[in-house]
Length: 305
Ligand SMILES: [Zn+2]
Image 1 (cartoon, rainbow, N blue to C red):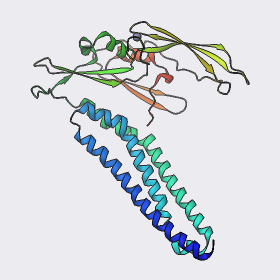
Image 2 (image 1 turned 45 degrees about the vertical axis):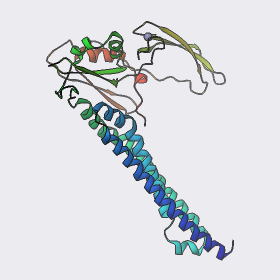
Image 3 (image 1 turned 90 degrees about the vertical axis):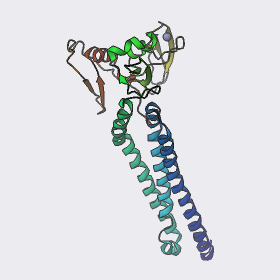
Image 4 (image 1 turned 135 degrees about the vertical axis):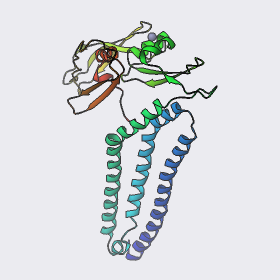
């Protein structure tokens, strides 16, 4: 490439990159605005909760990636005079742009992963506990406590609550008896049972049938049990010879305290050895105790986005 061709190339590069930068910026803003419009258009608090819970962090990350790309492009329009002097400068600028853009994306990822969840959680709590309104007469409804709500949940729902895979909120209009039941994800995960359809299928037994060796795969036997309909499901899983070690499961304290009606909230904090901290709130000791009995680090819902 002679000097003249190189200068032509730089000129068209500058133009294309400039256009792409605005497209990328535009998409970042559009992505954000569309979400806001959708969120504001929802009137039901539970629908707002679901949208914020499932989509908000993903949306913010997409916008930040588009922004990072726009930054990368923007840097590639700077100092054209220097770049025109020598081809090397073109590649240096490309590299600097990429590094800064990548850094922007990475920092956004860290913020969304570690700082943002706490902030989002406060908002979600507000959406979940704002008093619901009875659509029939506009009355404010009351949220039933864990003890009171059982009368309104069927057996399968109660079974799901007992294994902490699902948490139901029951709102009632005391004057008419109108109820609204909302379904939330519980603290622990359980699989959906393929017989009764409730989220009550849990791993009850894990047995290594054949140890994995340096060269050969092993075999792991897993047994699941549905606490609602009693279905037992068995599954054999291959133990890859590369990942032999199995993490220790948590050891639990039993019977920490006896039942006391004066207790309003029980907080359980679980600190894992990898520095992870999990907090859980319960309305009464029985619930907290049952939770601790069910608890297993591997059963926690993954907070990924
Ligand atoms: Zn079942």
